[in-house]
Length: 574
Image (cartoon, rainbow, N blue to C red):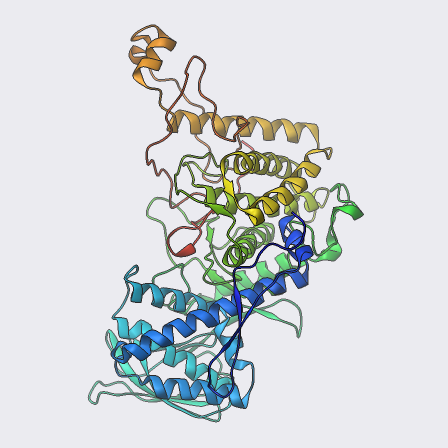
């Protein structure tokens, strides 16, 4: 496996003159791929992933424009020619501003959703509202570049979302439902007015780049990584901030905002490479540079955090997080209980972003979508892409807790040894499954081999004995519970094992207490990483479509629309 893997993506050069865009192949240097295959990655390696996402995003925007040119009525009252002239003028005035906007997670989520609408695989508001959001993107480009614009944009209940900037709300009587609004931009000033007379809505004029929060303007919150440095968006208004379907704004209260600001600042401090490796973590100079080894994260690489926008019907949202490959560097996160939980979640979800970007460039495995494999961090059987996502994410989580060992400021309860011991066992089990059960491609084998080398090195590191014992017990408990839930012997096999109807007539075995959701218990699985059959059984059939906990497990794979399902913060030892 020498040399870089064969590429699958393309770079798209922006043509400032509005002509044909130029396509050139992307080729990732092999050492960057190998850095990412350890579970970590340098600034340069992660930056290459961002460039790959840029190329993909420009290809997708080209597909959308082509479809809108074929069917201009999809835009409703908006005019595609006027929209695209606005974009071109902004890019000509301030080169790079449009690409910077297009590669943001706000545009990525909207673009993917709208293309699914056009393909008939997603639902949402009237199609002209989703497609017409392109005009709002053009408005933001004009505002950032200081150029002029005269466009019609969709309003939702009287509010006009401006991606990356915030939400403008027309005063007066609210516009009900979805209504077109005329938008005029001159030198950074935005004027909004209803296109239909007699609605009672009042025109609004403001400067979105500098206006403070008010009843009519909700700017996007910003979380500074460091004083005067980069910022991460805390987005509670963008309609496309969730995993797929548009959702209404849900503005944070002052208390909630203050909590997020405090937790993020503390999490950034915990993630400071100057703090890691902590004394006693076992990290050595050969285990990776301070900013490249698994479990480290440069917070500025995160582009957006979305506070969890609602509640689950079957339980609390604490500890939940999710992400989608459509929005690189973005994550949906429930308010965490402390900074360490937020830092761990940020590491976990950014691992999903990295792998999602890699999967956009390289095919890793041939997937039959059969959900029959054991994932130690979930209660339900999983498909192979889910296992790959889970392994990559939890290598990052294991590395995070490895670096916290002995750091009582970050880990006052001294749980890091247990969590590291547990996660290294879990990920090794899943990597064995991938190596023996998955039809891996060349890049896929290279990725799994790199992750395996990382985890095998960790398994040789000494860890506190009682913590290891608790991790093994938790692992065995989770595996036993999963087997009881999902494995079923054929009748003839039960007869052989139990002497006729003995097993059928016996009372069900009492399983151990169920693991807490996301409790992070891991089985000592068989050679293939799947649950072993019970004694006397010659061939059990796995679960047939069981979906226990589908919405409340931990994120270990893409679902519809390349999303990852919600995960819960790992619980402590049982």
